[in-house]
Each structure stands twice: as structure tokens, then as C-alpha cells.
Length: 511
Image (cartoon, rainbow, N blue to C red; front, side, top):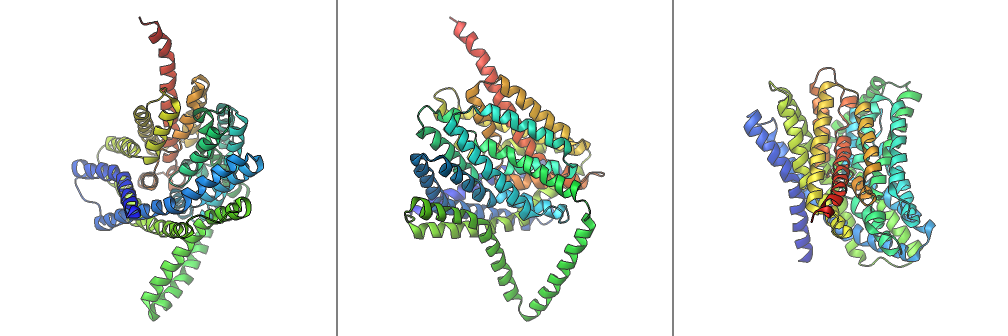
């Protein structure tokens, strides 16, 4: 009965994530566009499958991953072994990112649009390795008590330098990759590790030293993916996109022939085989988390897993939930994003494109569960310095402004380099001015602004706009909206903290 209650809660959680999107899209369809999109029934079915898949996935996390991950974090924190803690941080970061649903969706889109030049699995492995490495670094920072702002300033200066040399085909995707690494799987695990470590070490403050792991996990993949783009597009430009496309097409012809032969024998058997293959691919995605947990539990802690059957059931639900989620994306969220882009661009004025971007950014962020959770943790850790409601409003405003500016860039065709470098230059400047207690939280909030439902829709919206506007490239111009949604919440939160800090002396002088 308790599990059913938890599943119902997760179902409501997933529906709550989706509801702002449904409301905003519905209002624009009814009041502005005034016509239903093609394939509406398929889209609605896809949305329902997304909700169900996310609910099952969350239930699996709560049964299998979160309890074991938290107990391992606490056990290693009590031991106090630096190599062990850093090794666990690396493995936790890697294994959680490789199974991130939003990253899977964006990586698959990148492979399709680049005609196979960018490999989905290679991209995900590279991002997961970089996140693992930076989580290990973040654990070291927490243990040593270093202030986060030096790490972030130096890191984003390095990001900007790499952007100068990166090919335009990769820049938007690289910044988006940083924004989608910290989401439904990674945020709870990484945040729990950082806050738990800070709380267990004497002289460390959970607000100042506990937050920041998520921010580091957002930053480093941007560097890694841009370096990957330099290798793929600059150092080895021999194999062109059309050649790859032809190669992929030939493979598709072979697969099509096999599929026709198979369907002649039994269509049902073919469908079952396809489903089994997809489920095995999902198992491959989740396998790193399973291996990490088993290794550290049995080889390092040397204790059996508690509630083994429940943990096994949890991982089975994670795999099935991921499968349903990906199917729902293809049927629902991706078509909705592309359809809205096509319909809004077809109107007489572009004002509605900007209004839609503003509304979808604000509405979806206000309903983001990870933001609500971190806002509550920040208010508790801040001891009166912060208000969770104010944090949500500031972050939602930042996301809305960021996505709107990103949409403007696609419409005008401006280079993303200048927008991104200008945005992070502003962030670095504000970091110097902001009170130190707010910096780790502000950067973390930039990494939790987009949910597993929002990311695919925003990605599809950007790609749809770039496809519909003449002279735009889906690969060069279509990606980048998630990056803008990650930068501007940092700006709004830092500005808020600076203003409130400046007002304090004036308030103190008031009789």
C-alpha cells in the first residue's frame, strides 16, 4: 500500500511537471494560433506515456538507487578516506549521468541532426567521464574548505577560451550538454553527497561548502564537448556529413531488408524483438549505476545490500520507465516543440514567438520539483538569509529571460559565441561582487532549472525554429536554448543577493 501511495505521488509529480507545458501550449493554440496541430492524438498519447514513464522511473530511483546511494555516501563520509571519497564521487557522477534521460534525448537529437558525425554514445560517455572527474574534484574542494568562486571563475574563463577555438557546429550543443547533465538522476545524488560531506566535517558550512557540486558538474562538460567538437570537425574533417549519411543509409537499407524478411515471417515476433532490443539498450544505460553500487557495497563496505528484492525491483522499474519515457518523447514532446515552432513562425508577427518562449520558461520552472527541493534546503541551511519562494521566482524569471534571448538569437542568426561569452562574463563579474554565501547556491540553481520534461520540449523548439527560418542550421542554431536557461538564473540570483546585501546597512540606520 505504501508503494502504491508513493507511485501515486510520483505520478502527480510527473503530471505537475507536464501541466505548465500543457496549459501554455493549450492557451497559445486556442487564443493565438486557433488551429489544432497535426497528429494531436499521437501527441497526447505521447504525453501520457511520458508521465507514466517518469513516474515509474522515479519509483525505481526511490526503491533502488537513492537509499543505497545515500547510505554509501554516509558510510564513506564516516570513514574519512580521501581516495575512497574521490573514487566514489567519480563513479557516482559517471554512473548517474550516463543514465540521465534528458541527456539521452539531446544526444540522440544531436546524432540525427549531425547525420552521424556526432555519436550519441560517445557524447554521453564523454560527458559522464567529465562529470565524474569534476564530482571527485568537488569532493576534494569540500574536504579542503576551498571557496567555490575561484573554481567557477577560473573554470568559466577556460570555457570562454575554448569557445574561441570551437567550431560553430558544436558550441550550442556543448553548452546545452552542461545544462542537461544535472537533472532527475544526478541532482539528488550529487547534492546529497555534497551536503552530507559538509555536514559531517567540523568547520564546514552546508550552505557555503555543501552546495557547488552541481555547478561544477554543469561547467566541465561544456569544455569536454567543445574539445570533442574540435577533434571531430577541425582535426579530422575528412569524412563529411553526406558520406556518413550515405553510410548510415546503406546500413538502414540492410536493416530494412532484414525487417521486411522478418515481417514476412511474423510481424508480432519482429515487434517483440524490437522491444526487447530497446529494453536491453536501456539496461546498458543503467548498468553503470548497478555496477558502481555493487562494487562499493560488496568490495569496499563489505556488507550485503539491504532489501535486495526491493533494490532489484527498483532497477527493473528504472529500465522500464526509461523505455516508456523515450517512446513518449518521440510521440509527444518532440513533435509538440517542432509543431509550435512551425505554427508560431507562420504568423504575421514574431511577438508571439517571444511571448511563448517567456511563458514556457517561467511556467515550467515554477513547477520544477528539483528547484522546489533545493530552494527548501537553501532556506533551511541559510538560517533566515534566504527565502525559498523568492528563490523560485528569481530562477523562473531568469529561465524565462534566458530562453527568450536564446530564441531571439535563433531568429536573428547571431553567433552564439558572443551571447554565451557575454553571459558568462557578466556571471564572473557578479561573482566578484556577490556575498560569498550565495555563490555556490546560485551556480547550483543554474543547473537544476530544466526538468526531464522541459529539456526535450525546449530542445525541439530550438531545432524547430532553426529548421523553419531560412538560412539557419538546425545543428549550429538549433541548440543553445538550454544553455541560456542555465546562465540567466545565476545572474538573477546573484543580483538579488548583491542588492539585498547593499540594502542591509541602510536598513540598520533606520530608527
